[in-house]
Image (cartoon, rainbow, N blue to C red; front, side, top):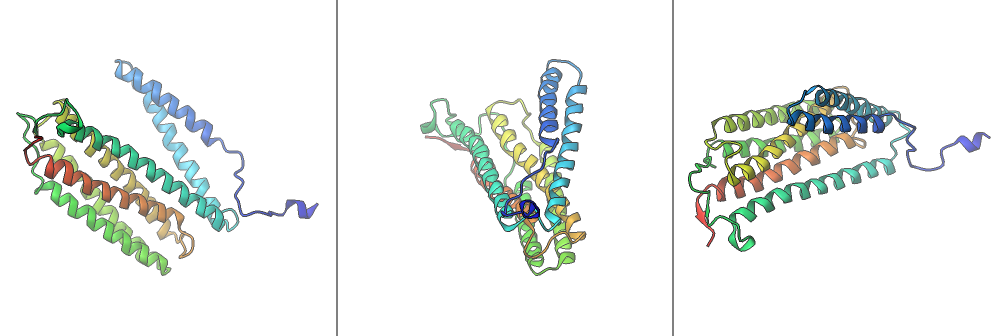
Length: 271
C-alpha cells in the first residue's frame, strides 16, 4: 500500500483549485460590466469583476510560489514546462503587436493598401519629436535591460541581496519610463480620436505602455521574493519569466521608436 502512494513521475499533478472557475466568473463580470458601463450604465459590475480578478491573481500565484518552495512539486521537468509556457505566451504577444504594426504600415505604405495615406503624417498632424522624450525613454528602457541582466547574473551566483538591489533599480527605471510616457501623452498635440494617425499611435504605444506597467509589477514581485531569498541559482523560474518578458518589452519599444516615432514622424510620401 505504501508503494502505491510514492510519487513515481517527475510531473506535478495539480490538486483541485477554485481559481480557474473564480477567474472565469470575474472575467465574465468584467466583460458584461464593461459593455454596461460603455452604454451609460453603472461601473459597479466592472469594478467588482476587476477586484475579484486581482484577488484571483494574488491567490493563484501565491499557491504557485508555495508549490515552488516545498522542494517536491517543481521538479526540473515541471520548471521546463513553466519555461515553455512563458515562451508560448511571449510568442502570442509577438503576434499581438504584429497586428498593431500591420495596421500602422497598412495606413502608411501605399503598396500594402489602396487606402494608405500618400503623405504621412497626415496633414494637420504635428508628430512628437523622436529625439526628445522618445529617445530619452529608449535610453531608459535599454538601461533597464542592462540592470536586469546584471541582477540575473548576481542571482546565478547566489547573491540575493545584490539581485534585489539591481532589481529595484530596474523597477525605478520602469516607473520613470511610464512617467515620461504619461508626460508625452499629456503634451501631444493630437487627441485620442484624431483619426488614423492617433488611432495607430495610441493603440501601439499605449498597449506597450500597459505591458511596461505589467512587467514592472512582475519585477516588483521578484524584488520582494529576492529579498526573502526565494530564489536559488538553480531554481528561479519566476525571475526568468519576468526577465524574458521585460526584454521582450525592450525589443518591441525599439521597433516602435524606429517605425512610429522616427520614420513615421519624419514626414514622407509613400510614392
